Image 1 (spheres, helix red, strand yellow):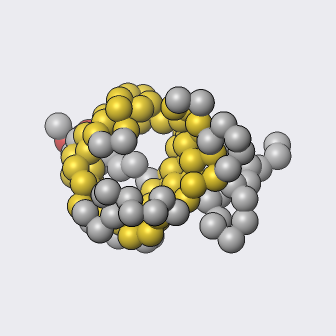
Image 2: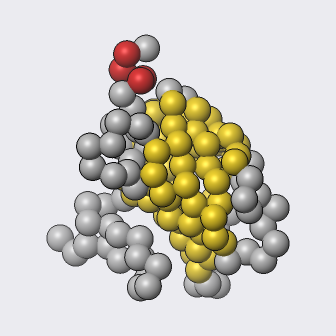
Image 3: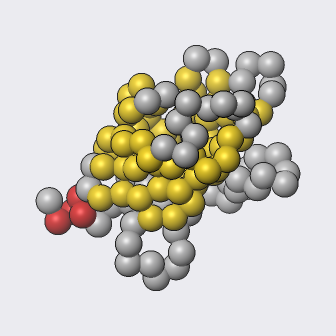
Length: 127
């Protein structure tokens, strides 16, 4: 249990779902005691179009709460609603998020240097 209480989704994660690539970044203020912050998500669908989402997250053990504050999906059904998810830390480089619109999705750590900048395209570092 002690290990679980120290876990956090902070970082940038990538998964594939129904032909789309979903990149989500959980941010947290340095030295923040609470496990909370903002998240940014970019879903690149089959035709290359990107759908962006921005919100607030909190986490405790396997519970993840996400609140959509902005979305490019018009009339998003979860906009402004605090939605509960289950997060499992399945390895040092993977997390599994389960809940509405996220059916058992396993996200892998994005390459080092991946940044979600809504003013630009999703950029990945070249090593």
